[in-house]
Image (cartoon, rainbow, N blue to C red; front, side, top):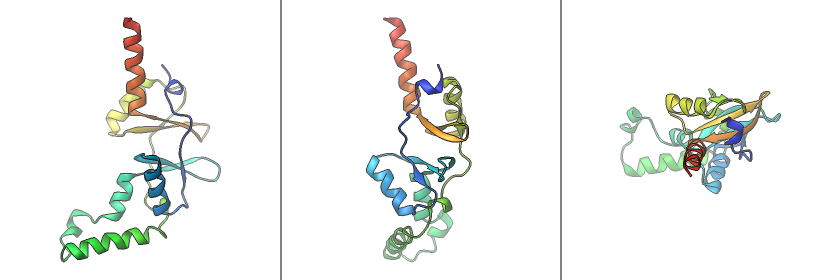
Length: 151
């Protein structure tokens, strides 16, 4: 089974020059946890996820102890959210993106997801983003084929 058989072809994306706030709103609006980042030529340049935004908003563990109390902690996060209107996605996105080709095997994708501890893999053809395959896509397809073969 090839990736092109299980990938989602209608992919929600964001631009690298979008603000962090705009990207966060895209994730919220579509109830998704991550989104590919593309340039003007629709080439994949990164991925921004809830985790990236979360790391942007919240302090690292060591920094946490420098806060002087709950009110200061709360106001710092609110300030970061306000700053996110000016901060660009390109500054917080993950640049080392795991991707596969449409003709790669679904088994390879599943192995990559486990090895890299990721939930989705971008599908790129000739440098352009053509789809995304998530863990759930692989899971459903594999089980549907297995169960269908038993009937």
